[in-house]
Image (cartoon, rainbow, N blue to C red):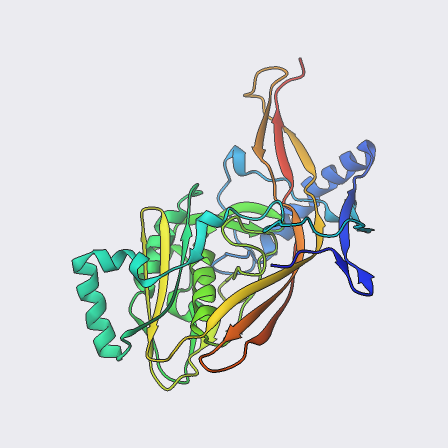
Length: 358
């Protein structure tokens, strides 16, 4: 994995943050409190089931993010004279690598469940998709709102989906719309620079697991969107956001045989796998950090805290600009580089609550 640092003939840029003065910050917060809620409600959430104006349920105190005033936090490039840290695997701020990963067939929970395995075998025979192609897992250590219900519902609906040869799979067509009428519940979503509850929130984990599984199965991705801010369950460049009617995840079965999708959510972990008949390639991910922006701190008053006390609600996420590419090696062929483009993620600010002044 390549990190941002010195390049031949040039240097990478990193981002630093210049915060506004106290009076300007207060004025901006006042304007944001009055003018920006309507804009936030009209903006399309990365996970939102139906884009456009919608009344969201009030978030609890710990999720009441203040809309980041990006315009007031001017990012300016700075040179990095030192280059990458020798031996460093992942940049600081990236997700814990134990919460996600490529799934081997013997790690899939249904292989140890006779009832589930019997059901899978029926679908594999019917689809003529006997071979394990690829799988991916995401563990949800700290579920927000009712996202586990959404993941269990979506995984159950997705399991058994067959993608015929030459067809394009669409997650929105298969699982959407993500509404109450379809059984989805409030879950975490990004909207207007905030973490908010919305119906179907959390189903982007399913899109993300499918995205990674399709890549490792060697299937071409037709449509994929990054989140507006970093997610805590995969590195930047490996996520996939969906919003019904606005953002979809799609891949094409370009093989001569059907592809069967199987999925499950159990023990706080989402499992997604693809079965088929072709030989999948060997895939390695490579990423280059082009820029990084540290989260700023937003302080808010909580009358329930004791005088002089503070509480960190959320540590925030850094912002990243990341270039991602793959090295794809098929049997008997030389490795092929496949560029996936550049993704930019805004920072999520650090949230601190304070009680009355002591």
